[in-house]
Length: 452
Image (cartoon, rainbow, N blue to C red; front, side):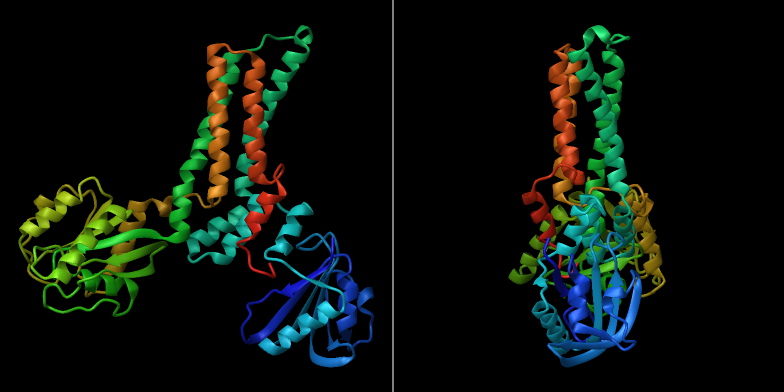
């Protein structure tokens, strides 16, 4: 493969910038643009060593910096790699990259360094995808899960399932090709039990998809309640700033105010909705309709009730709308005399009492959110489905296993069962990257940044 180069750090001003070079001629190219002050030739540098020196372009000094050398196969890409660190100005960074191109390197494509790591056997496709997830992680929990993926958590689960299917496929093929030489009868019931275990494991992986999406993108969460229940105060408490306007005038919030925030260990995509009430105000009524739409689309509802007032007809209308939804009932304004009849809120499985003006209430809400979403209980090291490509592969593999089970139970010929198992294996191998087309690989790496 050709030798590629790219800026590996963000294209912005900073303390340093790093230009990464990878390929058969990486060291040769680095030697053309970098001269160690020690006078030692770059080509004599061993792997995992660094040198301070002068960066130049055709003899013209550009900057001073540091050169790191990684020798194949002990590098990120599995190839010879050179990394030049220079001062972090945009102009000088681009000039150093240009010098590398003049010395024989070619521009790297998006994700090409990680793609080469995949092609050189340094990681599986699911591990490569986890690299992009680590880079884009916006919360601690998803970062930890992505690190587990990068270390092969999903790959190991898929590999274990694949081995079981492969064992059955091999057994079936032996029975088809050499029936007279098999010592034991084919036990369809035993093999069906193994396939049921495989099916359930694939279902477990499919079930992890939604949790993975919620961890990565945040839980869609609507804050709802009647006017002046304290929704906007609660929004400001959770966001840590005056995101919503708070007044004693009913109907102040007429539209939806949205913000993505970390509530404890869970990321929420919060929407502070207009208060529910009958109104002749056209703008406010539109806000109420949008609130109902948010309720339908949200995965979690924070239903706020004013503890210092009796439940109203609007409260009861809201409670009817929330039946069957995942809700946390929040009785607000505990700093005031409590009048609300709590027994009427029994439809809510989770009820907490707070004062949204008290910053300590945020911890109580965070604990309730973690418990309600279940995200705080996830085994971060077990592996999960992180994207639609992976989900599609698992879903198709499970479909073939289901067909194989049906064939075994109906007594259909073993070759049909074997074909279904082989198809399932193909999908799982595509997931891990062991049997995947170049088009699929290209699609995966399109979402990577250049330089990674």
